[in-house]
Length: 437
Image 1 (cartoon, one colour):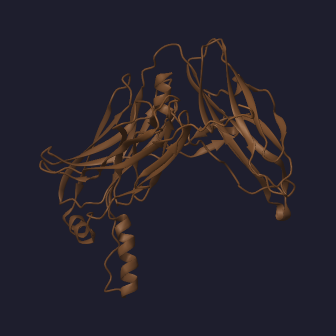
Image 2: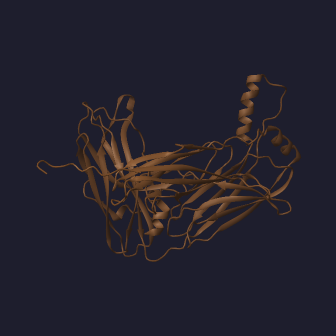
Image 3: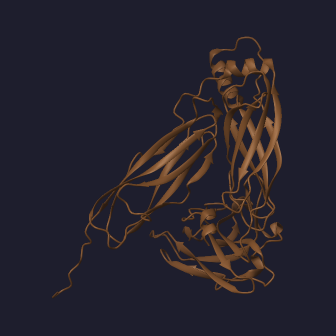
């Protein structure tokens, strides 16, 4: 299952919390579900088992017991990454008929947890990846005042791989388009406040956008990396643009839009863009597609006039340093934030630099991704201290390589390196003596 771990990450930190965080009037409680996403591997014609834990997280004096309903439902993902649930989204690779639960309705007392067990019964004809979701509904949906229906629902995704062989990732680029900057027509000299607002609006549109749609034609989910290179009329490469998607994983038969943004202006002339997608595994092939476009003299002048520069800080890291104090045998998860504060897309690659920490002590849930302008992402770092670890200070670092979109030259690139130091204090395990011991 090594490849699956590459697709979903070592820690599945979120599938979806759906609908409304508003509770029915007769149920003062909250609900936590773990995991929110998991893969189940099963051989065709056999059975496999999984579990999901549901917790009534409220313990206040007004919290009462709540009834939880569990249903297996279909879902689909739109090309722009939006999730939709329900019978109307049934599809040919649905795992709903295969999944049975040991309980469809149960009651949780305040603070109580229940491990719901599920079984996957794969038919002998199964081949590849299938999916469904366990939808948990808290309380009975009721029509409140003014006819508004209020309910709390949370879904846990179950992805099933019925593996017959090693699957070759098959993808195709179905569409590529380029959006050039748009500027409002110049009409006199506006007032200062209006001029400032117009400047902000024009800056938002003063970018080159590349949109590419990728389709998964295979039987297994894929999580590709996308990028685009810009070429001048003489086929000289002049720029690099990472491509991002709101949900990078593409299920079999699905398509996904990827977008790249560059703010730096282009001179007048003819250009071409070459889009690349690599599957992220040794079994996949790189897909490419070219598209030509041109920049007029008028557009080039307006673009250069409205460009405000890109020399500001484009990356925000929080925290700047990670400090942990743990006992031998302890497991914990810490998070750090990476934010793109620039006006173009960036690609990010993270890896652990182990100075004194042994291999396997720390692991990141995601090591490579792209961020849209003004977007951010939390990265989870799991830390597992071996039971035989010696009490002392240990130092490591999370190295972060960022490549931003923009024009390049032979003497310069758009890569910047930074790191988050990690300090771990391993303390002696405190033994509690028993009476008379």
